[in-house]
Image 1 (tube, rainbow, N blue to C red):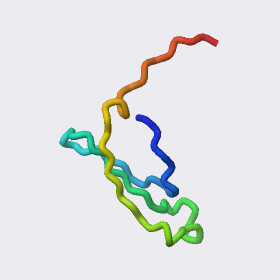
Image 2: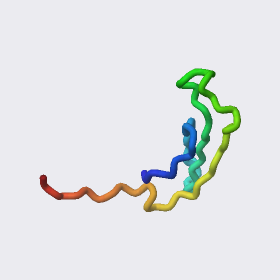
Image 3: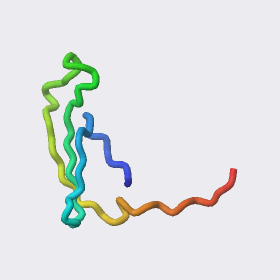
Image 4: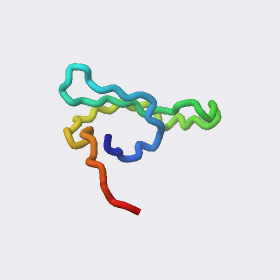
Length: 67
């Protein structure tokens, strides 16, 4: 899976569409790992849907370089 841009908050859930039409939904929100005092209320919660291309999820070829 390829890396996506930083969303400025934690990605708290990710799901691929089970019908196979290459949609990826993900939620961005505070994950509470640092307690309630660290929550930034102005950031809120967002849900995004991304159209996944084959090259986004296809395994990369292994490199055969030696060290």
